[in-house]
Image (cartoon, rainbow, N blue to C red; front, side, top):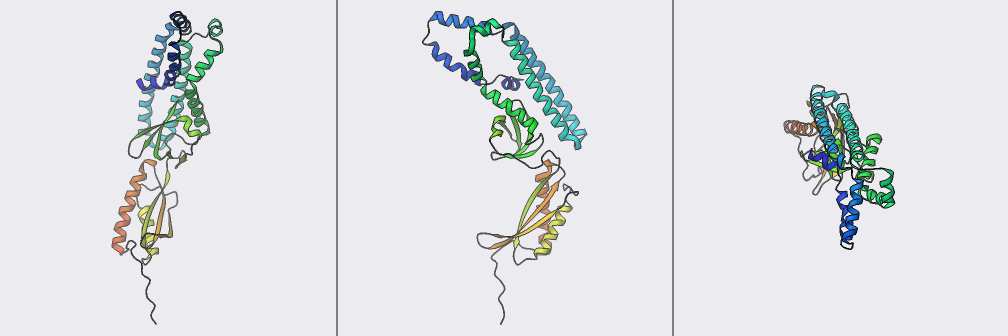
Length: 302
């Protein structure tokens, strides 16, 4: 619940209050009392308790829905991403509705109060909530423009992992090291984000191998193709491609073989890569295919 309160009450409000503290040193006691009186007229103290109850109710609702979504994801694995996307939409609009209701309950927007504060109040509120509004607009753009979706495996700012949630202020990314990275929504408006599966459950993964130029490259390609095709994690409806190219190394020139195949689920990416590497290593050992070394062309006989 504390996490939700932190989402709904931005830290920028505290930043906006700092200039008021410095100005308070130059005003008289009567001015301070008058300012506090004006502030008390804006805050609806009777609605503060209701706002807290609303936050608690929203938190309980989201916890309940998350448990249902988790159970459905395990029972219907093929629809896991679709279920998570629906849950992301639900979370987003619950956050938005909760913020609007809290503002309406906690502040007095009567004509007398608005006339009393005038444009200064509007400027102060806008300054205090500018970061929140920017993230809110960015969150709406992410929901509808869909540069990525919930469950996508994306690369952003040096981080690589799965989109866990798209919230009112931020996106949570779980890396392959099982760390959770929180990224403000507005950063996605100016940075490039790469999505590996674009809303699909399956995704392409690439595994690189290097063999010597003097080895049987054709046989090596077939062995790699077989290792990928027989993996328990491969998605066979999609093609398996092995691309060969020369690759300059520090002491020699090697033959680079790129295995491109699709996995059944994004969560199997590393499992598939490990499985193919182990299978290929065993097959190469059995057929005498060696890694690159100092390649010396055969001498021509006269």
